[in-house]
Image 1 (cartoon, rainbow, N blue to C red):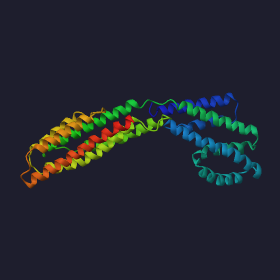
Image 2 (image 1 turned 180 degrees about the vertical axis):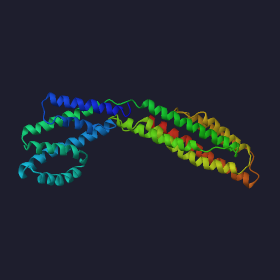
Image 3 (image 1 turned 90 degrees about the horizontal axis):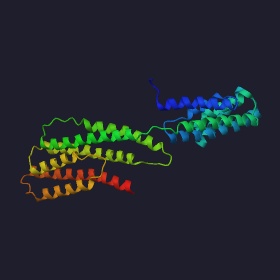
Length: 321
């Protein structure tokens, strides 16, 4: 059915269950328990808990202050309007303004029965506890996002493979037609996957961060470097000079493109890069200014690729701590 998501199903089940429990306990305004469930179910467990906290304290505050206000000044529309004017700043000051709507429903219950004795207080408290408890319970069932995150990671790695391969190919052939669309596609996938990873973190009360989110941040930093490297490769290729050092670096990039994955191969990649630098230093000195500029740019590219690999190395150091 269109629009029938996991959250919709939980809301429907929770709302019905809340009314059933409230009716079973013969509480007045039993449907209010369902309204609380509907308003408290959020996208993640942590957001649900924060919403419940705000609505609970706002509701308790409203039933106490509302009872005092109505008993002192009477049950009439003007008094209710003045109560709202005075109550909203209190909620804002306490930073629980997110509970305004539910607190107003509680106050309207007092206004409807025109009574503020202990029975109505216990009735409202019971409805609040039933609604919020059921909301917390049904929202404790969350889909496992690990497979979705892994799928995003695989797509990102595929894009990085293409980018590195195309950089190598462009160094060999400046006439090669590459639009660079993978850079934009990788950025979009990273942004999408970070949203899912944050959602996964917020579905675990004791977890502030996770390895997947660190990984995605690492890829984001690497992508920023790759954008700079693409511009520099374009400059190097536009010089139109063919030297063996350029082919050596292109070969390294092509090899790097074949080893884009979530595992830690940074030590191997850095060792091969050091070998490449040593081999390039052993070659004959440049004979023209153009060749000198090209080789200087190549060493700058090597420096950027070293940073690219080091970013991933720092990830594994961070995770192991």
